Image (cartoon, rainbow over the protein chains, first blue to last red):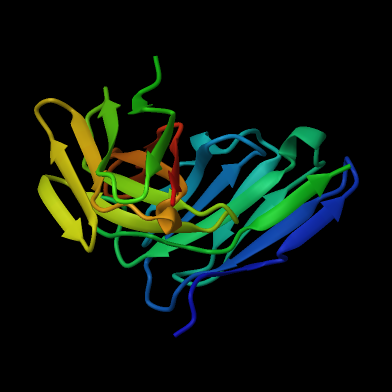
Length: 115
Length: 115
């Protein structure tokens, strides 16, 4: 079966442009997570979708970041007016239940470079 | 002080050695995760623990809820175990209609196992 997929795998953009990152979770997984990893640094938790609960957006780095999920399927992470400090690998993961219940399956990430 | 602390930051070992990586946390958690990040960047979830001990092959993870401490052990280490090992604390929050669960990451332990 397919794992978690993310697209694009690499994205180079100019400062000020908007970008949209996509995550396709494993079918049947109700929980979906977005993380960020800047070069040489640790993982940062961004946002978590679980069922019909409204996600807490306080982990998003700024109001330029937004994330949506359609039901229990695809999620998109949108960064508006990109800045150089947004350059990072953006990782998505999914699991059958929440992270107090299940291990997570990670996608390969989208490597974003803002020039 | 970080809410999740790992030690050591870097670890080198000879093939065959027994390895221990420690994780301490200062927040109330619902579960603790151990992740492995390969040199190429891919992330694999190793364990999700809420109590006691779990074993998978040569890997063993333990957690002591009262002491807020978890350990990851690798028996008979091998060069292919070389990776960054990350612990992450799952902090539960929210209500039935809003989700404020968060995952708080340690800074990682970089392990190199030499033949």
